[in-house]
Each structure stands twice: as structure tokens, then as C-alpha cells.
Length: 296
Ligand code: NAD
Figure 1 (cartoon, rainbow, N blue to C red):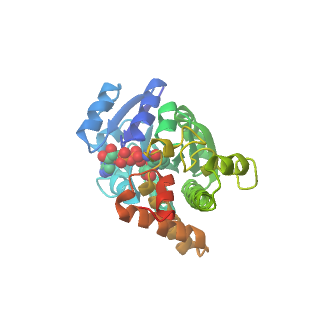
Figure 2 (figure 1 turned 90 degrees about the vertical axis):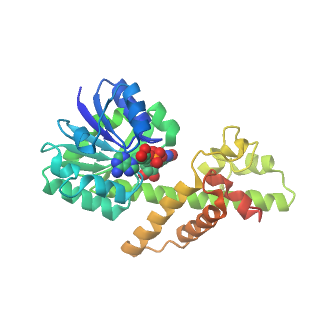
Figure 3 (figure 1 turned 120 degrees about the vertical axis):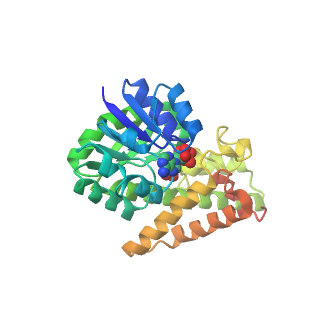
């Protein structure tokens, strides 16, 4: 069993860390929040007062932080973990961040004598708790091979998407498609209402027809057809609209840099920005149906 440093013990990081402990790894844990560090200690981790303490004397450092600027501030510079960790540490960054930063972090890790993979996840807090996350991994073959046994403890599906940054590329492409498909699904249900077509009937037909998609069959935006969907609990997330907006902004930014044309992705970003601007960012992303019906 290995010694692992874990940085970022929030909604996702804490349960991922607990699964590493359950598998027998020794975990040194750090978060800016004292409450998070205390919970980590209760779960069997050694809490650390500084990020550097969690990164020294370990084989692997996993990070699960809000955005690219947080990962850069923790990893880079004279007091960053790349400078302070033992040589040849494996860094696994599971945060969802922009592709350019993921590639920069990979280059800097190599310069400092470490290995790094970007390994963002899909599956949400439920998947993190159950150890069933999907990991989309970017990085060299050797780094992927070292990371895989740790990822298998926290997830069920692990795909090596290619070189550095390709895990993040897969994540934003997937979530852009998800945002677009949710808006399309909401529009179909809102139109059905106006046309006097019962939502359950539309579901029975479309979920077995060419309009079938995950937003409809797993996160159906109206109450009833899919009992576990957030629509049945007043749109409590689930996957918050604010997080969808974050991922859509990353897709728009990446498309600008890469010269890709994504008119629907850009429109989806604008619609989720309107939803968040109306104070609804904490609702599940399927709650955008209220706005599309013309009701906030
Ligand atoms: P969160 O806000 O619950 O947790 C982030 C944690 O990082 C917080 O505990 C915060 O105190 C800590 N933190 C911030 N800056 C730090 C620093 N410099 N050093 C140490 N700790 C620091 O967020 P989350 O929901 O756990 O999401 C983490 C990442 O996973 C994000 O990039 C998010 O986009 C991605 N993600 C989240 C979900 C989800 O459903 N929540 C799903 C897939 C991907």
C-alpha cells in the first residue's frame, strides 16, 4: 500500500480520499478549511497544516481543487508542491480545469522531475462516494500506468484519452454536449406543454425514439417520468447550474484558442449564465426549464 497526499477535501475530494483510505493507503490530507481537515482526520487520514507537508514523503499527490488558478497556486513557484515534493512524485490532478493550464502543469511537473496526469471525473458526489467515478486521463503512458491502480480505487471507468491535457479536453467536450442536450430536452418538454401533450407521453415516446438522450432518461427536467431526477425534489442538485456554467465557459475558452466553431456550446453558456445571473446557479442544471418556459 502507498503513501498518498490529498489536496482539496471538498464535496468530491473528501469521499475520493475516503476510498483511498478504505483501500488501505496511508493518506496525508490538506485543505484550506479546518473543518475539512478535521473530517479527514475522523476518516483516518493524517491532517496536515500545510500543503507541502501532505506532499513530502509520499508516492502520489492527488488534487481536487475548484479551478486552474487554485491548482497553479498550489503546484508552481518556489513554495509550490512541484518544488517541495520528493523527486519522481506522481501528481494526479482530478480538478476540472482549462486544457492550457493542464498542459502547462504537465510540462512544469516534468521539468521538476515528476510525473503528472490530468484526470478529471464524471459521476458527481454520488459517484465519488460509491467509488464509481469515470476518470478521463491525459498524460504519458508511463504516468497513466502508475496512476491507474489509484484511480481504480476511486472509480469504475478509467479511459486514457491521450497526452497531457486530453483528459480535460474529453471532460469539456462531454459536458458541453450535456449542457446542449439538457437545453434541447427542456425545450421539447416546454413545447409539449404548450401543445397540450402530456409530459409522460412525450417521455414514453421520445425515450424510445430518436430524441432519446441521457438528459431525458437520467435527469428528466420535469417531475414524474424519472423518479430519481432532480425535478422531483424541486431541482436540488444533482449537478448545479453554476458548475455546468463553469464547464461551458471552459469549452468556449478552449474553442477560441483552438479555432473550433461551437455555436450551440456558446449559446448554452449564455443561457446558463442568465440562469446563474437570476440567482438560480445553485439549482440543478435541469432547472433551466423554468427559464425556457419564460418563468424564473
Ligand atoms: P468544493 O468547492 O466542494 O471543494 C474544493 C475544496 O478545495 C474546498 O474544500 C476548498 O477549501 C479547497 N481549496 C481551495 N483552494 C485550496 C488550496 N489552495 N489549497 C487547499 N485546498 C483548497 O468543490 P468540489 O465539488 O469538490 O469540486 C472539485 C473539482 O471537481 C472542481 O474542479 C469541480 O469542477 C470538479 N467536479 C465536481 C463535481 C461535483 O459534482 N461536485 C463533478 C465533477 C467534477
